[in-house]
Amino acid sequence: MTLAVVRPRSVAPAVPTMAAVLAAFGSALLLERLAHLGTDVVMQAVVLSVTLSRTQRDTAMADRMTGFVVLPLVAVLAIALGTLMSGSPIAGDAAFVVLIASAIWIRRFGPRLTRAGTLMMLPAIALLVVPHTRSSGHLLWAPVVALIACFWVTAFQVLADRVGPTKASAPEARQGRSRASGRMAAQMAVALVGAFTAGHLLFPDHWSWVVLTSFIVCNGALGQGDALHKGILRALGATGGTLLAALVAGTFAPGNRGSVVLIFVVLGVAVWLRPRNYAYWAGGVTAALSLLYGYFGQPAMPLLWTRMEAILVGAVIGVASAWFVLPFRTRDVLRRRAAGALALLPEVLKGEPGALTRFEVSVAELDKLYPPLRMHRAITRKSPHHADVVDLLRGIRSHLVTDDPPISAINAAVAGIREIYTPPTRAQATPDAARPDA
Image (cartoon, rainbow, N blue to C red):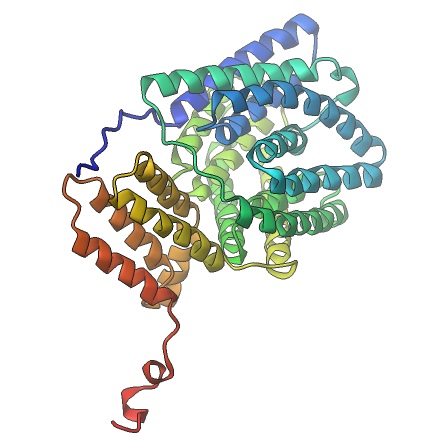
């Protein structure tokens, strides 16, 4: 039996992402000049391109087409929401919470609505990123900006897939995600309410930074450990970005185009390094914002220190919500997903068509859980540890792609995983010196 597979060379995700961002920037800039709009339209296009590039990666063409319908509609809704948030903050904040929580809750109804819910959130989240949104003048142009971002992201990702296909998308673990979606929606709603309250009280001019951080920490958090890990990385990245921004502050005069070039360079590096560690992304965005503030003539450093404080507050709120509102543990998510991967192993060993690909995708899904587990293992130095499950499954995957998989090594790895999840008996838990027969 031959299980070896040939993989075409894949294109680094940062390449199509930044190509789409630059194309969307140029298109939106042309639109802004022709229609005499504000620069926030251009920024909206950039933000949507960055976020859409990540959410649409490895998506089937039929699902990509959903974005061309959902995103423009929600963009109009987001503009109306921004107007409401400016005129009636309490009603606007409440509507924002309902929109985001609903987008998470509908994940329980299948993969198509999961993707639609993700698209629903993007224009709303862009409201938190882009300063000085002039909602009233852009209601008719919001769908156009959304379509610009959607078109360029789709075009460059499809082109990248033709040059070198990326990994297959993961199978949907619908039952587990259905149960979790209600909890995650409740956690997000509580986190956003707390973030809006703290933001308006502590940072009245920059409350959006608190809300954005709480959203990032809670969104898609796979348990308590994952939320804590994201909160720590968000804080570390903001600190590092603030220090980096201090070095470049004042380098460019307001309106200098060199700062725009450097912004895209920093974003490109941040996108490239994000898969390695989220802290790079958080730091890169902070540094890019410093250049952006300088471009518009705003004092960068005081705003950056305020931003770092707001991020710390938002991270604490997001982590607290994940830990105390209908909490679930990251290692329990790992147990369920690891069991799903192991259930595919007999099919792979029998050589059933597509089984190896499904197994590889299931193991790759565990990469999202690995960072917080690895951090916990490094801190506690516990052995065996739940992070070992990911290492063992990766080892099995590497064995399976060879021409002659070593069955004994695969069986040993499976036994190691079962040992981690098998609670010790009373005799095993008792030290040798304390046993009656010692």
